[in-house]
Length: 375
Image (cartoon, rainbow, N blue to C red; front, side, top):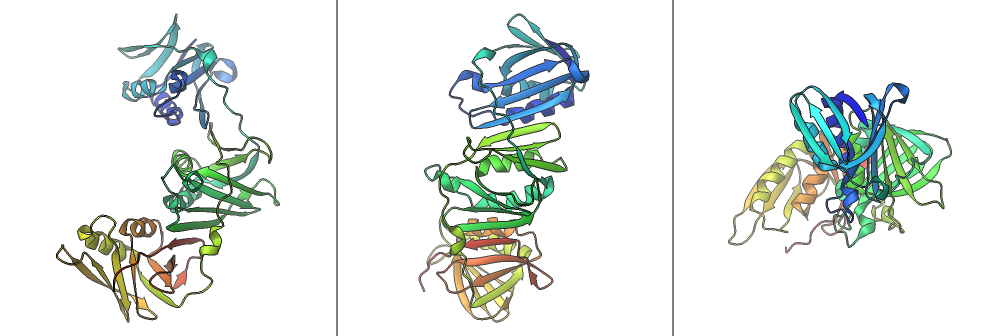
């Protein structure tokens, strides 16, 4: 095998393929990136990785002198490609070794047994397409609510609900719930599917496809091994879906509210950051709402304390307390100049909705359970 490619093209492709490599591979070959060169169609090089859960594949143009296929350390190749000088890169085989040459730099890498490498899953049938920016924004708003506790595998995922042109992302960690509704371009007007995707995988997918215009979403047919796939601009990634019955979380959203308060998102974020400096670990930030204002308090007793007053449109007095980290995460992805807090009591879930020009945004909802506090 022998091919030549521009440094930036190779570095970008290897870096993208290597992102799916496991931190602690159960088998040495799973630390490798498969590099396949073919002289057909003007010369193409395919780089791929797979850990039995997530796969990544990218195809680039190259000057291919001799075709072939090798398996080399993915992270090492990615680091080498990133630091090579800005000149064309040549990769060729010398016996069991892969030689990378760029300008006056030469690296020799041992190849691994490619026969031991698992076959990558094929991309399933397409179910629709979504703008890359729209996907990234939606995932960013919802994935924050998925738990990182691997003992609760169902809650580490983002549930994707597809009903024709309507696409919904939702996630919960039991203390909060995020729901994002949007429209997309379905492959068929009557498509109806549900998928539960690991939040960390979906976040990485949304980030890695951010430079493209449109992302194709694929799902295996019901009854087949559950796989979701994403493809755009010569790149493909697949992931096994999480198996299990997701909790009926929509019923957690109250049908009505007794109290509402509207504040500036930016002002509230900055105030929460300031007063939470004195909050001990797992200590809440209290917000006391009254006519025309919201008073934030943190700290208590003989410890350090902080207080700040913000302007607010409030319908009735109420005091609630929140985990400051959960509060800030929700506010930071609101995407609107103002936020409306819909409340019933100091102990029942509070619904956060973005608001623009006096109108709440119906497409994103962030439900947060308050923390009980001593009166």
